[in-house]
Image (cartoon, rainbow, N blue to C red; front, side):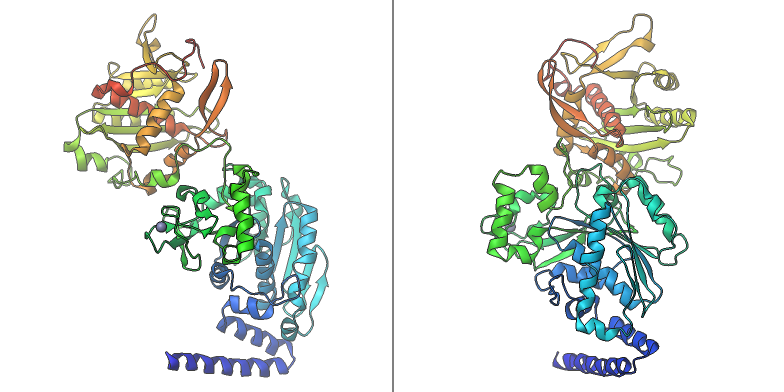
Length: 584
Ligand SMILES: [Zn+2]
């Protein structure tokens, strides 16, 4: 150990000597080599702590921000910082910009904020102070070539940063060729503008991006970017009960904020956030984007200082702040006013059945082949047709009942494109392969559902409709023929039923990577209590931009499964929100 240290020390001494000599020559080439030597040998966090000033003209200290060190030292090509308030986000971004300005030659960056005022503020109050330290001045001969509010160019390296703003119109960002875009307060930049801003990097071999902001709700830009990242959470193991804590919705973050300090949500024992590590919580395997979730309660700067901690505790538990504000601003978590009936963590646990197809064309059902003998012989298919004609999206769920009442989903498939005929034929073939009962949405236009009934067994196939009905379900025979028969379901009661079964682990799915998009539909559903015509009632809804088709396809499949299996107890009885029998 001692030898190791002395070897490092010696190496550092030698490097320092070489750097000194290079700096002494005072010519651009040797200065550039000196800077390269510093950056290639020392971690970036060392540079931040020993070279860069904060806004008050002091060297920055990362001692109370240990999780930031790892971010500085491993900056990925594309990164999102999902932050609560007061996480030094702007300092972080300005440090990155300064590091790049000093380190690289001819590196072109663009900072994009949502408003002119805040962009100007960042340009004037966050960038210049970094360069005030004498140690940075030592590294540069010439300094600024241009130091305007909307553009800064460092003469020594010819590296530059532009400052632009955009909320819903990215035209101001067009024009210059850029190597790296830094998006600040990205929650206030419209998602569809990002691709326009990204075009500025079309010619660059680097194409680096840093997104940073504070979450709002799950329809927001930052949440959508976060979902495509590897979602790194700071995981802390409780020394008392061995429970791994992270500041996430599934770990009950409110329980982690206790008067005596940051605590284990399971046993209440105080935990030290210094003993933690970044762990990916996205179930997907490959990611282009690295995501870090940073929030006040996990930073030692806040949780080790009694005064700061008291402030956090008050904000969280005094009742003076709405839960949404606490979730967004203190925990750095997205939050929807209508609450989510089920979490991603809960759904991931249900994906235990393995791959859904054994071939690449999606013909052979792998789980059916494997588990066939375990089933009761009751198979059901639920289908929800994409309503919008502009963007067709049909979801089919095929599953089997086990004797213990567990429903195994054999196939959860999303069909896209305009070839409706091919979709219907594929769905019918899958259903016919196991003689499944078929239930499909009758929808505003029942033609596709009727076609499916014709291609399968009309005796076992059924069109379904949601109505506000006294009963959870009943049959409504048609006046003329079977095409008008409807299986009528009470919408919120059957969705509640399926969510209860999911939470109880009674519906199982293929592996997550095969069904991630399907599951996102289930996560898009939120629950609200509304004042209706018949008093207060529970309503399941979804944002217009976020589909929930998979939920209905699953509801039809599962309810048909219980009916066919004769488990009427789950589907009989009066509705919880009885009203006159009219269309909802
Ligand atoms: Zn514990």
